[in-house]
Image (tube, rainbow, N blue to C red; front, side, top):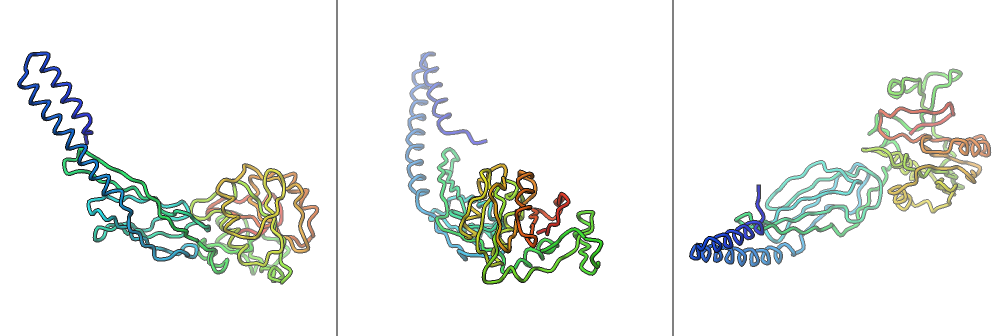
Length: 328
């Protein structure tokens, strides 16, 4: 256990006064000299450590833009060789490897969530004197912007999850040739894979109604919103509406700006005033929603509209509430 130098100096001063009280003048004089010398050592050493640790760390990152689940390396080195470096990464990243090599901290990170990150790495630089009496600490952030892009195709998320896009509960009137047994076993109900509608890529685009709630931010390794953003990145969008607690708000289809809104989402989404177009896709969690307004919205939508149920982790139980939905 490290005892702070200030405690030692206070103890020496208290001992000096005790010796004076006992008329041990010579011993009190010696103790006062030790306390004074230690005080000077502490002040001088702290100033030296502070001056050294205030120097900016040297940071190199292998790339400023990566794909989802792609890795990036950061090399952090401090001009003071005695400095100890600790690092903490943004929640959008996960650390796959960390080690010291030639007095530098090497961090290998993986893009966990889609998004645009400011200051992806926070660093804690610490220096301790040889007597282990004085500690100086500084906090630095990596002053760069790191972008984690959606996968090139929605199939990249599908492969990583062991599931597929465009899944829906099996209709017994349909043939069983597209049955997806892996997901059926996971959900304990028959699930079939439906072909993607090629009309989603037509020039006129698709109207998107996207749930904006805390449930869409759920997920540790993959969030619901990550799957939704990967889907949005793969289709042509004409209009995009975020459904929050006060109804539908039209926003620009910029996936990075949309993702920032999900870092502090509202509790519930109310589908008041949400109106679709000729081709409409509704992306929802079916959890943090006002279900009555959701049903009223569905009645106003064209018959060929799609309901996309976004799920987080692969083992998440799915409640489709009896609606014809596709699962991502």
